Image: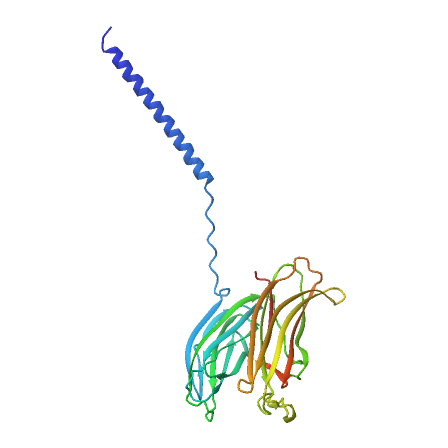
Length: 343
């Protein structure tokens, strides 16, 4: 036998063993790879990009206003679809600096929208007397339901127009924001016609808004947006609406008005009685002679009960005036909007 034969045989065996081990390693690696690929979760789908019609519009701008002046701010357009509703809401925050002329100044701001195949101009405003050094935020809102598709154009306008005012020459910086939000078909704007303006005597509690809407789905989100424009009877001609004075000489009290405001939402059963209630808002305010105007605004949300006991909601926004002066709740500048669903 050739003496080199055993060495060759051993080398062949080693090569076979190494080759078999390599095959095993490759097979195991393939199995691990397959397991990892199969066990890996699928990537989350990319959320769809909102269309122009569904994307909220937000406009923010800071501008100065000097007494006497009216100033129009930047206009912005957005598309609307026939039959859809859109919530328009603005906020304006400012402070009359200490040391500027006058101890107070009148400040008014409004949001107006036009176009969209509708000749009607939608507008809501807010007014208040600004006291030196006091930070004030005015807010208000309205609902547009498009009668045809097209574009709406909106803008804010600020004013303090009295040339003879003690505050003539005073300048304020105003940070403004307005937004348009599509709200679908679940939104309702409650009219103030027939109830407001309303004069509430000292010691009297009145429902300034009382309205009902049908409801079908339990547990859905309820959003409320409201502003009450009130004045106190501290002068005869200070509280007017439609050119008519609402405070007579015998009603005037220079001490102003303290009042509570609260919003309750009742679920009504088949007999029209409240079987469930949500207390959504409550606040206490004093309006004195210098302020005179007050814009009480709030935005609240809650979910309806999962076990609704009825199919109708009743909204009651009430004011309790402690006086001593009578309190006027104006129709102009007051609003109440409810949005069901959407969350």
